[in-house]
Length: 109
Image (tube, rainbow, N blue to C red; front, side, top):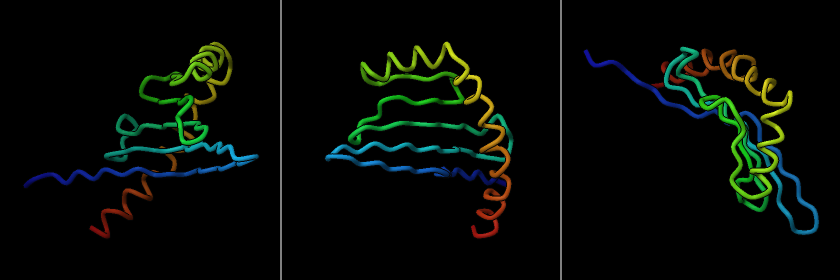
């Protein structure tokens, strides 16, 4: 019997701030194919005017910058306590909630 693989993306947080025509927002996402911790990815991304500036991905366990400002901030954040805090967010934020969402999706499929 073929195994059932379900893939989901949970968008837990979306904050938007605008001032004088600038758009600044952040997304926190949990990607998962099963309830196993190894199959779960935590991604925390920051955007300015629809352009991704910087992101933390639990699969690489560090911040990655996508612009000149993002690269300089990624270097600073990777050397400070912020990166350790983000590494712990996968367990606190994703693993804790994924089981419920995974089971809910299976009952509807």
